[in-house]
Image (cartoon, rainbow over all chains, first blue to last red; front, side, top):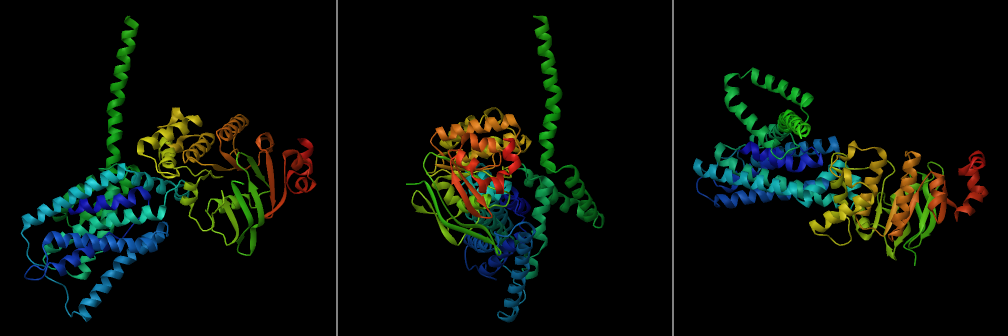
Length: 289
Length: 245
């Protein structure tokens, strides 16, 4: 479920605008770390829902600031900067913890796994609903046109900076929220683990795998990947990454729309012969009358 | 009062003056042509008006309001729409969505979704694109893509429309269709400022013509005056071309 939230919230912004963000690990990490601090070590400092809201809010605000500074960068520069953000935050927190707080890592309070599950599910539903409505709203149209041609979008009356920063921040909020619920699940939180750069690439891989053209593309990608990780990785630990890499390359080459891109194609395939049959039938009827 | 007015408009690229100290005005309801050799600064002037480029010296006023320092989306909502020389359509979006963007975001007062959709379909119909509204914009020919640009600009309900080489790359039939369309736009009450190299089109529909050369305005007047202006013939129309026409 965490993978779905990551993939969908990533695709919420980067899908239509074409701005490739490698910052998910940063927003996720902010959520994880804030939660590790606020959850308290033994007794609860704050109730869990409040912690999650704060985690989401912190990521939202961070994304607003980062967005204002970086969203004027295009293409690869934006990607690299967002990636740098992950490393920067990770090092910064590590330094603060070691030198000021003199600890290395934190142990968040134990939370019942059922509660974690419910909350994760809640975040998932909120993410899906938001992604769905943004896609269908004015904001979605604005993002799509920015992805199509940013200069033309601005000349059509779209405040491009505002649209980009706002959606970047919304997508970051969900990453922060899912990070905040991850902290009590992983038992031990350390800056290098919380800001694992792998989580920046994961949503990209899942979204590409599933396809970004359709709303359900990133969801499919996340499910497939999560399943593969849980089932196939323990079975073939050495071949797993290798095979996965090859499959990803094949998909990029032959299925630019991702797995989700297959579905309309299959529908066409099925409909093709059917409509031919139908037309044939009609023609026969005409011939008979 | 002129609808658009420029005083001492200047833009440097490095040390080179792309537009140099240009004074001009456009009156309500006119079709004004802007001509000049390549690199004369025509598109740059358009970019300054639509705020695609910032500029420091000079002043632009739209209906008396200063435009300096405004962002492109503000300019658009004030009532100045434009098309681009090299078409900048939203290639992956259907034609209707392309135009809907203009109606949804570019109008002076924000429209409801239903009104925006109605506005977009009217603009499509005006540009003769109704039948292909669901086709992805990239699948259309250049002529139709240019029409999308016009429809998209019209959907923002402008008072002034800047057309940047609308006819470039079109075949003769398409050119005369485009000329007809420009005339109809003017008839609907929209003032037009157009950059064009197709002299037949300029001479056919413009009431007044401005000529830029090396960023400076070298002539201005009616079509006859411009066609007879020796300086213009020398730098732009050319002896040979003039003899042919």
